Image 1: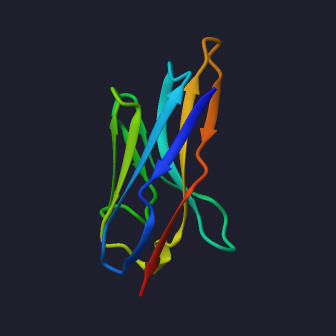
Image 2: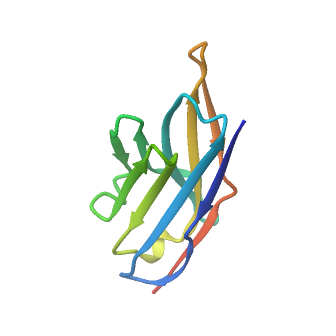
Length: 120
């Protein structure tokens, strides 16, 4: 099992910044990627950003140029630096850890989520 713990959410004014952190622990061998999804009230969950163990990143178009994902492999921690925040970024942000098993299959683990609220 993998335990996933997020931190860093909160309330910020539009144009401000927040930094989310996510630490993975437990059976952390074989982690292929880590990332963030978000879900706003009444909307579907959407991918925000991911980063592979090799450092390759992927971003949703809505956050490109404003958000930066980074990773500390030694600490099994992923960060999401969010700048120029907009009210539409308001959502619960969930950290995802994807681990590859010895048989090649992937398992996904999720944190409990952290609330990000951007006021206008």
